[in-house]
Image (cartoon, rainbow, N blue to C red; front, side, top):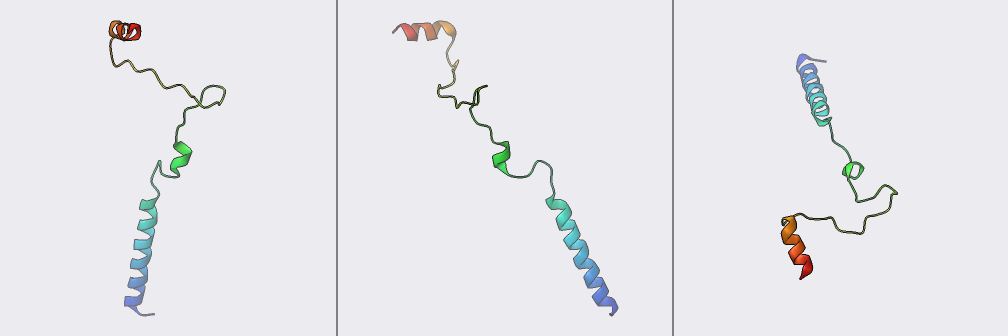
Length: 66
């Protein structure tokens, strides 16, 4: 083994090692594991839409009467 082959092998190992180190980042993985879904406390899917407070309470009451 000559010196240039050893340097080439060492350089390849360093590049390979650094690429493996940078690919292991925190909070990475399957997005399906962290996906949230709309279930209630009995593990039933929620069917009602959420309440929106886009308008103030008095305007919502007026709209409800009409």
